[in-house]
Image 1: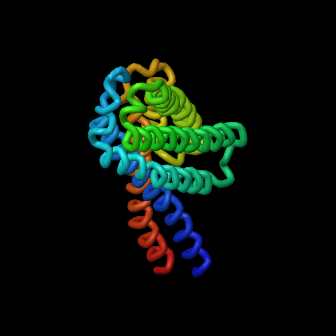
Image 2: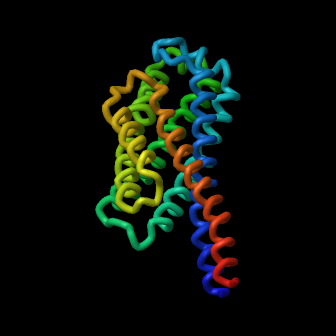
Length: 229
């Protein structure tokens, strides 16, 4: 039936869009984090000149973050569409609110970091002797590593709960989300690499959704052929 075929294509297209958006977000955010970690010393007491040694790499990393945020918003929208009528208002509110807050923190930290790097490049001597550099760097660290990680943990917790209730993903994936969320929520911000757990988890979800989508493409045509025969 034409209506059935259109409905099947729509249901298959939705998880595939979520998988593509999640993969883009994970790849862009991990790439940005790696460039920043390799270019800027982790010790905040290092001289300001060390932070602009690889200013081009840092600029590329900061320019990747807006695209990562857009991909993440797309991922949230498509996942909500995927849940559909099974959506729980309480957990969906936490899911949507924490996701939007995470993107806002990502953009704010990127804006502050870009401003600090720009001031360092234009007036390195003045910035090196002022407290603006230390203040800006501390703010970026707090927003992205401490508060951002906590909000990401809340997002993972609510998403995993939704996955358990709706069973749109395997149960082991939701359990993994709970474990990763606990690490982010209980971490005290000393290990900056912990922030990479979140994009890795989104990549894992996206890969799982993509595999499920391919299996559905393989099963549905055979089912329709059997019914028509």
